[in-house]
Image (cartoon, rainbow, N blue to C red; front, top):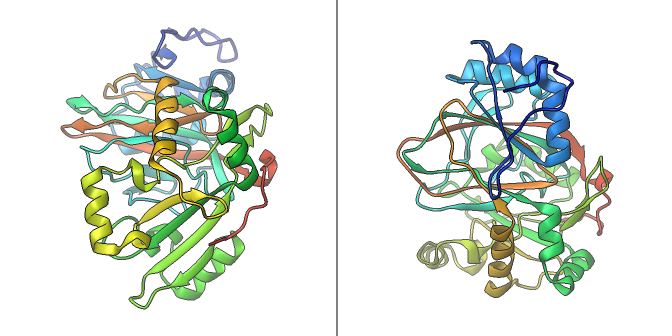
Length: 336
């Protein structure tokens, strides 16, 4: 049950290996409940990193948007540089990324490669899958502590490099990622956001961007492993899919890949180690239709498990933060 006062501590349930869970009674008006409990919910997430709210009975996109806007302070971010297509329900309200149901999305922080990213992620499950499909979360500070010191030191010194290839066949299109397919608009965006770019003879686009792998939380100062090094790396792909893509597009033509910030390749063993450490520090709870989840995007990484059956999860991003305000360990650059 929720507290009687919106400013009182929330009476959430804690269980090992699971997200903190709050049972809510919205009385048929989830948006009003969210408005009344906004401060308490946000304070809880600031302290614990994530929260699953069960009992709101969210049923459709309009109701969910109203809840998201209450919790996000009325201002939801527009996604830029998406790595996969999404459906847009309303301004700032999206579907989860289109990703094959039989392929997991390993945990990551949303948009950790852009210069202004969300510090709060909002999720709502309208239709829970028949099997799997949870949105697991991992404590980024604990992950940082558990990774080998020499590996962390290397990433702190050189950062990480994201290499992307945009085409009309796989992954997010140029228009989906940049909000336009006009070359001058794309080039202007890239120059303003420390992204190196190169147009390909076939009309495709290749980009490079170098970012910090470790940041400090903008409010608490806590050091966090903050990146998508493992998720967007070739060795996290299903081996057969990687082989197929390399066969079609070549080693340098994968839709995305990551490297050490100086351009050195990251070995499969390093990616496996990062994924293993993430898994050791992950909590999960299966979705139920109507659930709401709040996640601190800097302190807490999130993913998506394999699933079967229909799955409809809506997403919003709020509380934009500038990377420059998070004590990056390197200078951000577009670098090849």
